[in-house]
Image 1 (cartoon, rainbow, N blue to C red):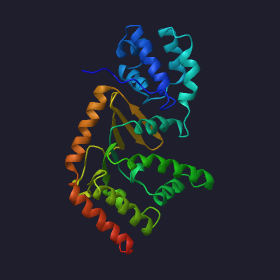
Image 2: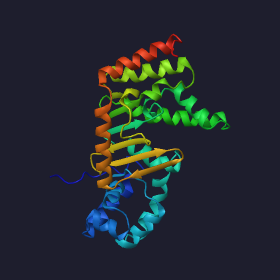
Image 3: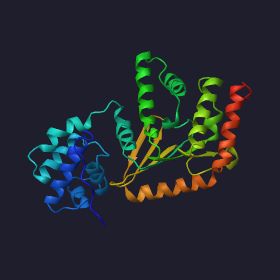
Length: 279
């Protein structure tokens, strides 16, 4: 089995600390799990730091400098690595998306962010933050669109999205906005850029009813799971937990409509919205 690839320190602000962390750990003869024990995190978390998929926070930087005897290198360099234009609770997720090879995503009440059109994203943000200045809403929408540019690559990452029927029938921004949003999703699926299924009302209870679930896999780092609810969010790297959540997602996929039936439903609803016939 080949070893991990060297990171390009110029590729992102987190690449240099990640590459140095791997080098310093190997110089000390420590595995990721052994180093994790010494700084009270999992070995998977160390792997995410080394791969640049997680930001290094100051408290971890101090402990790593102490354990690895790196003369304050991580404290000096974690500032740039920790900067993000996204809100703190979501920054790690957005940055991990950019490195993921595969993303599996289910959202119960919305079209997922990576699949949203500008008008749909604006309608969601305006309702969520009714008194927020327009320039701030514009920044949020642009951030959403910037994330979605991941899909400009013809094959990577692989995005497998399960859309709930509730998200398709809940009118966000008006019929024209919904027609455009659903046609956008259908177009990505028709071009084979995404794998898309719909969880229909007829399926009844299913494994992801309690909230949104995102699973991310990487070429050189352990997988991550992200769970989100109203004003709550958690990024999970525990291997056993991620494995269990992957199983729940597999069950979700099994209960959803086939890809072709999902497309038929989405395109039919898009036509209804376009002709203002949706009840």
